[in-house]
Image 1: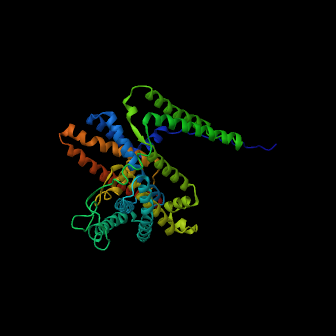
Image 2: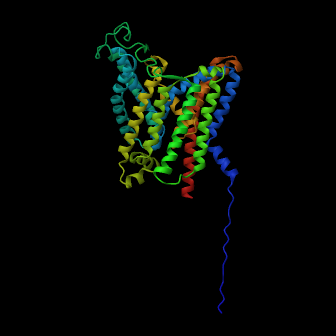
Length: 432
């Protein structure tokens, strides 16, 4: 008999290192966690009524979220934070000034503004994309400097060309000398034209949202089971989501049946629906061929080019989409504000939108809808409470105002520094 050597291999099952995972999650989300803590401290120090903070936060999130969401696609395409969305904001303001001059009011005025600004935004986005293709690797600083250059042309247009080359005789808009647009314009034509279409209390909105989401989950589950005849994967996830949405509706119902002051908080439903549609658009476009090209170009332009993707064209499309969305977002912002600072409303659009995205946990290489919405909520909560918190803590509300600018510029600087550091670490790992 021949001897047979039987080797028994034992697989060592490694237990998941929860400590390492927790540390990784903490490092990845250190910025939003830090700002949640800062916001809680600010709310405590400000001692403002919760109803006031909630009302202000609803208004700010509704009017600012759209512009922040406009930054996601360029990040997906590997172009970093598109500070040139200020050109889109300028396109929106050009259209608003024209509609105000023509005295087209209400929803018709708003739709006219959107239609008029879109071709301008497409042209601005195309030219911006062409320029950024010439400066690959330096897109963010290029887009920032481009915004300053475009601002000069914008001021030339409305300070000197209107009333001379461009005829406009409107005492409401034009300066008394007959040349140039006034510094501040009352936007009676489009003021609240989107927000006031339909408003609903926060509690009723919670109930409607919870019921709608539960219904969608049930219909989707029934479709997979009875129509597609397939077993639904991640059944626990279905149950968890259904439970969360049902809880939201239940809480709303409980609050509505009490004499709570939170029943007084009104939400601009149509504006929030428009923001929701943009979120769905961002989700949808990622699943399309164009979205996959965005991802591929963002990961590695050389591999994308070898794969047959027209890299420059894809990058231009990403910037055009971002610029058009920024133009629409500026219109939503201004119709909520009700007044236009002709020469200043657009200047900080790119800076504060980028700061909001980064505060939500995004980076210059990765940004999601969750990052955008979370960052908008955190940044504007800080904006609401910081003046009063500064006054209560240090006796001066100006300290809180300065803290706003410090936060915006500081977050962007720290994020860019971390990105450069991570890039260096990855390069060393590849070479070693």
